[in-house]
Image 1 (tube, rainbow, N blue to C red):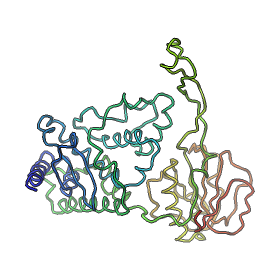
Image 2 (cartoon, rainbow, N blue to C red; image 1 turned 135 degrees about the horizontal axis):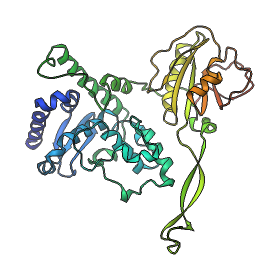
Image 3 (cartoon, rainbow, N blue to C red; image 1 turned 135 degrees about the vertical axis):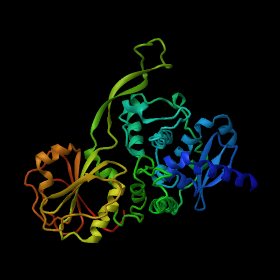
Length: 405
């Protein structure tokens, strides 16, 4: 108990120092709400969540010998927490956990300018389609798609800059995401209160500081997204199969000799070219925002998009008699514009589809309105919110009912 108290006092003094607090006010507020424990079993530092409490595990001796990494790793741990890496179930149900760990590290290391010990950074994987600002799951899917084409084996990769053991093996609890939201909300409120009191005007330069490269309020909105389960069941993986294009990739195989080392059969794999279905299509999601769509129906559409966004990159289009808005889906549908009559045709205009360069269209509608006579150039899935007959002769359709499969 005394040792843990000493560790907390030490950390509080560090993050309260003007040099840290002025540059990282939101990080300091998050760290102040975590329970610090000295833990020599971790290599450097780790975070965990247990019984509603976030813990920061610190190997003090590591930082005695490597003080240059303290700030960077502290920021890294805060990123793991506020990005939901500990608490969101979507980061646990993956087929290739080693690639997920790489993606988690890329996101946790992004936007950190301070030194880190041999970090995994997104720029090292640009050849696989990794880009700045991508979500963790988008990066994971890029790595999965690239694995047959030469993603480095685990032995060739760098290790995480922290220890994932204390949280990676645990189970995600139903309240975990809400605990993350409450911690962040408290931290944001604390910083904003100090700003309102004027404490940041002179002594501390509060110049719109960021948290994990984002506005903290935006992060809080994402964590405050839909919590309840969607009431209707849709097998989205099967539903968007027609949108997933096949790409030509190199596949390593021991059944073919290597051209460079033909004598080393069974030791060095050869290469074949084959097709592999892409993993994350770009989908245009059109929401019928006419007055005939009820509030409950629109709320259910938002919940369905949360599930669909795990499988595809979504551009949302709101349309009643005309397209009123188009934007990238960021985790929630708070409100919609329109609420007039219904015309299902505007999003299918060839110029509009070409401008967005999508792999397919998912259209949420009650089906009450004119539709294009000609089939568009991209596959279309109609998601019907009412059981009424829908006269459109083309496109696949599913019914958004409350019955679960």
